[in-house]
Length: 94
Image 1: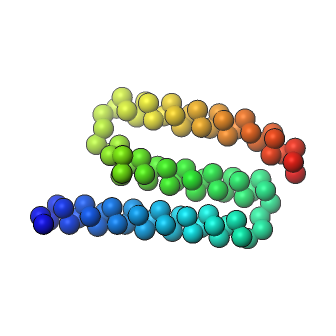
Image 2 (image 1 turned 120 degrees about the vertical axis):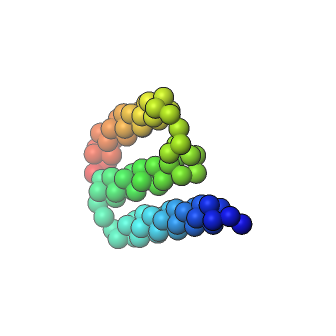
Image 3 (image 1 turned 30 degrees about the vertical axis):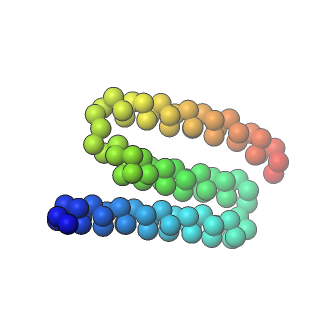
């Protein structure tokens, strides 16, 4: 094994452990009994962090050109629009 392979393996292990920790945080927050709006907002925020970790490291977005960032930004904007679109439904259920 070369030095580069070992450091890459450690990086992937670190990202994997971070994803596990964020999953534990999400589950822990669900068990805390937060208000539905706060719980959903927190869970979506943690999910966004997890998605960015996966995209940046496992999908190798860190090595891509600027065009891919535009495509990724379009996806993020679409998710934000959809998330904002469901907020009135969540507010009506409170």
